[in-house]
Amino acid sequence: MIVSVSSGKGGTGKTLVAVNLALSLKNESLQFLDCDVEEPNAHLFLRPEINHIEAVYNLVPAIDENLCNRCGKCAQFCQYNAIFVTPQKILIFPELCHSCGGCALVCPQKAIAEEQYRIGSVKVGSVRNLELVYGELKVGKPLPVPVIKEVKKKIKKDRIVILDSPPGTSCPVIETVRGSDFCILVTEPTPFGLHDLKITVQILEKLAIPFGVIVNRADIGNEEVKEFCHQKSIPILLEIPYLRKIAELYSKAIPFIQEMPEWKEKFKALFEKVKGLSKG
Amino acid sequence: MKQLAVLSGKGGTGKTTIVASLAVLANQAIVVDCDVDAPDLHLLLEPTVIKTQDFQGSKVAVIDEAECLKCGLCLEKCRFDAIKENIEIDPFACDGCGVCAVVCPQKAIRLTERTAGQAFISKTKYGFMAHALLSPGQANSGKLVTLTRFFARILAEKEKSPLLIIDGPPGIGCPVIASVTGVDYGLIVTEPTMSGIHDLRRALDLLKHFSLPAFVCINKYDINEDNAQKIESFCRVNGLEFVGKIPFDPVVTEAMLEGKPVVEFAPESPVAREIKNMWERLRIHLGLRDRNAEDENHHPLQR
Image (cartoon, rainbow over all chains, first blue to last red; front, side):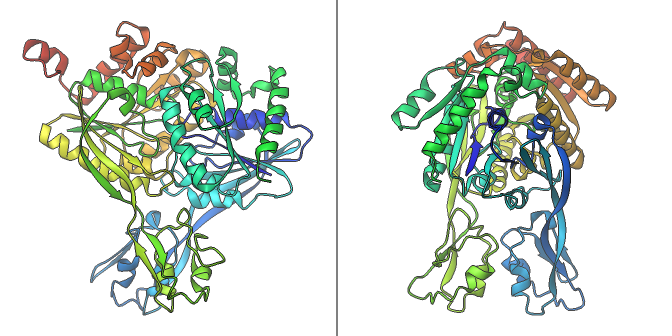
């Protein structure tokens, strides 16, 4: 079963929920995938022993200058402006390339091959019953999606898989949540939280992924998030109050269930609810 | 004109809260919300939209069912898993690259434009604002950031504004890179948590990659004063301009619930005082005049 933990707004507590949920399920064989490859944080809390690192590459065009006659068809074809052809010179911008392979297909001279261009890495580690996989986008490279895809290739379908998503409502989030049996949306009861929750709900409805909401810092704002959920019949799976102790433990990268064990049962109950509501 | 981009790496550290207050303090700066897929700044600045433009995002492939022979060549060549087994396009997965159209022997596939959001020029009582909204789940947020910043630059030139403040998205990927390209300074808002510190480093590396000078401030510094100390000394050792530390205070949420920048909602609160101090430091670093002081002597620009 694949459960993703996402949110529109950043900093609502995705990693907090995903990590504490994972650590509450002691008797299960778990996989934890941190798909926030721009700013992965789950490893700070889980402190795994890393036993495998691999590079992630994009395929980018490599042009054989001897064969190329500067016809410019590749540049014309490229939707990402990654190739620029002048009568004298061809410029490739590998960081803009989406690796579609089209330039090589359209080149009448067969002058384009593809070469590997490093954009990040995937790390695999383990801690007790849990395998952690996380990606890291190389700083300065704009495309997180290929790194997320590599992380997701590590999914072992026979396990319980928890995906920690990046924030937002754009392509990295779609790539993460696609194929999930259930998505937990973490929000906070503020105008910012509600605004971004509404956008994310639209996406999950379009993708036909069942979902529910966790309200974090449930007592800081107003009732509008809850009203929205009731109105749309979205299940509220859990409410986590604002507690200074939780914030302080978070700041030290300590999963709060370790110091507040009464929460383990709540996370287990959360998981049972998720199982009941999910596709799988 | 100076351009200041406010970033964080980690989400939810307080970028928008701080940008809204800086917009009040800078008085008639141009403000740009570049977090186009989860924009929130408009909830604090109450803009009145004066111009809207549709945003053409990435293209999307469309199959002419009458011509398609279901040969499956498109499925084989598509690297985005955007063509399903029954030879239908999955618009969420389609990257608009055009490979399927090129390989189709029947010429049954073409690329079409898709409207993937809107960009806006608006007026607020603190000055003009450029912002946008990406349609849910669309790609190409970087391109929409670039369009929004283009609007902002036109505004800034027209208004002869000395400062443009960018509310950046979280992360370090394409919309963030589009937000910092060509700016003069980055201001990173961090929090004293291990995650905040980890992400601060990556955000700083990004600014370094683009050779941009960085300012750093800590929000909710008193959640963990040890970590806050570490961030301050890290800045000192690495020659980074540390411009302020803001305490945790529920008044920030109260201001948000009222839809107001915190310096306006609770001007005497410790949070507001710290943001004002920070603005003074930034203003001097950026070499800007104090427009509020000028306004008192001349005619106020604020409505």
